[in-house]
Length: 558
Image (cartoon, rainbow, N blue to C red; front, side, top):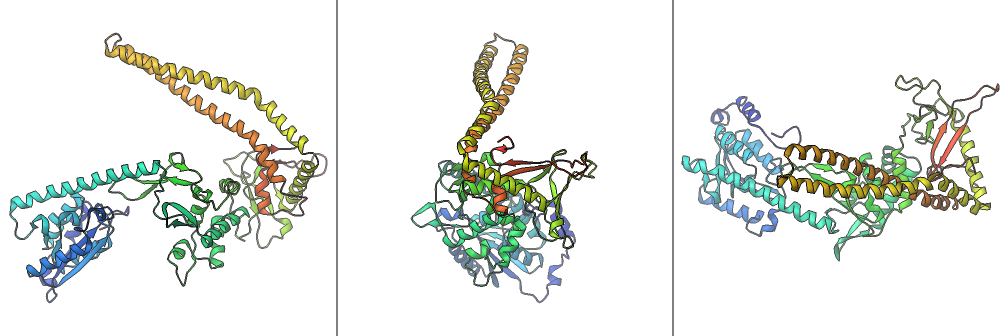
């Protein structure tokens, strides 16, 4: 009786259809079978804080004593430890329910209605419809509920207990959410299980320690990504290397299957926790009934930086995120192009796909515009280029930049700074001035709208006039806030450009003259490559290639 959404939110129509298809003559159908008495106990994680009275051990002892005292024989005990009462998709309950549906249960006994469940509607579906139809006696010991002996007034009162239990669950959930939010905003780590690669500090539950063995797997996954492997390929490599999965490592499995999932690889690659940060509110749930996780927008995350030792440095993490944004298509041969995800068409701006096959020799492997022959894009040429030729061009250009930087670093830096200053200085000052003006006007509008409201309340301004003026001012204010956000984003980018020059220099300084290119070198240095349409006007095939370096863009003018 589980819903298609994974919840156990069962409706009346579904239950009625189930009942009409069953043979209701259970006494004849089950002749010769022993009738069971189900003893059911439940304890949620939240209930565990209430003390020992509701513990599984105490519930079991009470139920067994009640069964003995009331001559309820052939008992079978079912338990759900750590499961919420708002959801009936619990293994112990579902196992007991299967026996009920098979017609072998005579009595169903719980300590009280709240142990059975905290959803009024669903409790009623079982206790008022299903159990009576199947001739199952339902008993809630502490609530005095007994479907066989109670009169109509007692029966009518039971639903009120169910309503109260549901209210209690809702209220408890609300309080827990409030406490969790307070803790999360104060910087306490909300996640119960530490990220793979870390372990809990035994002396401080809010602090993480690096797990030396698992952290090496995390670093390996990032290295594979930088070297051009996608999540699916990384998962295959880890499986081939017999690397235990996250769950197998935590369970200390002696015979791991090592069946890595690409989704888990993606999760690891995208976790800011590996930078040494605590990240709260990444997920949430819709309500106390629906426990399914919802992934929140990253802008709603609350990040506390440098709370534990990092496993991945910022530069590596940023590079991987940049690569994850680039679209790379897996080839049938399994080979990944050296420049996959970086090559684009100059004309239609679509990405180039890497064309290869087992029947194609390496010197014929090439990049072809994905917009060519696509009816949705007006690109009349394949703009193709062989990978071997592109490798020669890029390698030569990188070495030229390295050599120039080694000999003329100051000239190189000054040239980039001058270019940035010429292009952006005037615009930067203009934008800063406009932000100040816009914020001042937005503040004035707040005061104006407040005065309008006061005048309207005091009768100095008619409702009609108030609605017209307030609407106009609020629209202006909305446009100003949008403009301020856009300007501040642009200002941040322009100021970042100055720092980007230094980032590029730090990367290039690591290298001397390169003999060959590797995926890690290419992805660390190159942001984008644009392929122009071939030119055959001179009788020879020539083709312009634009190389955009990370942080600094095109460097053709240096």
